[in-house]
Length: 109
Image (cartoon, rainbow, N blue to C red; front, side):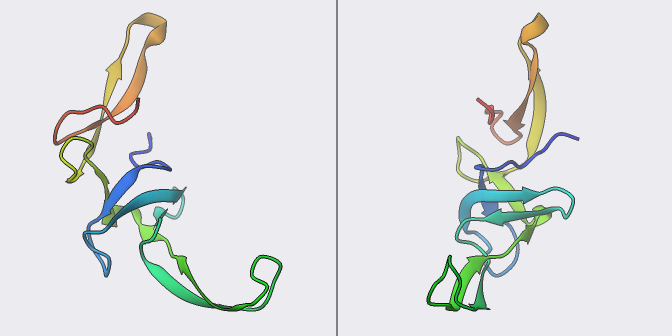
């Protein structure tokens, strides 16, 4: 099945403590049906000193959200929208692209 939400998409959170916030998708985990969104669903983790964090201590990081709790932001209206698919092009140039259901704007360029 084609991916409706991909890395680097701008999404709106539909449910949970961060409802209404927008952010860029950093990672998609299709098997777990989860996405990690930049600056959303932050949790605090107590970490030991390491090469990456020499000081250690409490660090805030993004936790995954269920994919059903986010929707792609419509490029035209800025509101959350569902995603549909459309085939564009002719012959060998044919390809399947994602389209915003609300405004009909093509998401994949």
